[in-house]
Image (cartoon, rainbow, N blue to C red):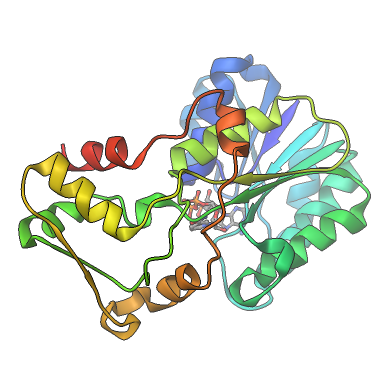
Length: 270
Ligand SMILES: NC(=O)c1ccc[n+]([C@@H]2O[C@H](COP(=O)([O-])OP(=O)(O)OC[C@H]3O[C@@H](n4cnc5c(N)ncnc54)[C@H](OP(=O)(O)O)[C@@H]3O)[C@@H](O)[C@H]2O)c1
């Protein structure tokens, strides 16, 4: 029996939909802080239970009788909140006798710097829990860049970026979710970590790809981070090389190559 949190969010929804193609609905427990938001899953035979990361008792009841838990990391980045919420979930899973916890961690979490500290802390909680665990170290979502906003970039004929030419290995929410689903059902033993990443590309590659796909010239223009609005911190992470190492883990889990830049860009421009 699989318990899944975050089912009302983007990644968790992909996971639950994919698991429904692999397993009977009766094998799934969907945990939501507002079960009404997962009513469609209940209609399809999934056991929908209330579970709130801030309410430990609700989590113990939500995880009761399940063997594997997918803990989707909380979106609340207020300092101190996520380690507490994730700790509540891990403690509840231990109390409920869950045999394996899979956690949506982040690329580089093992190094513990800056904004990754919540994931580093949660990975430590998992190690200390003694429960077998699966770390799903997700890269950044490619939707941050590969989104319908690229139509305006094509119209302007210019892609401005402060990436300093360093490649990124972003992957889509859909493929990261499918990777999580595959990892959950793989039957791993012991503690495992997956580095979930897509193919490497640079923003200059993206400008060339937009030119090819749209048939209109799109020039790459390097700008300083302070000219990129709220994205300066992302560009600083890119420049630090956080996203520049490849990994085959996601394509192995998918059993096929991760979607390439051209296909992804063509899909959002279509
Ligand atoms: N790799 C990346 O680039 C990237 C980018 C953004 C976020 N993330 C991380 O990855 C996680 C999953 O991404 P996503 O796109 O699926 O996020 P999302 O769409 O915002 O979904 C977050 C999920 O967490 C649930 N949640 C929030 N607070 C909760 C609580 N107190 N108790 C129980 N559930 C709670 C939400 O439920 P409600 O529907 O009730 O709100 C929702 O189902 C995020 O939460 C964040 O930690 C990663």
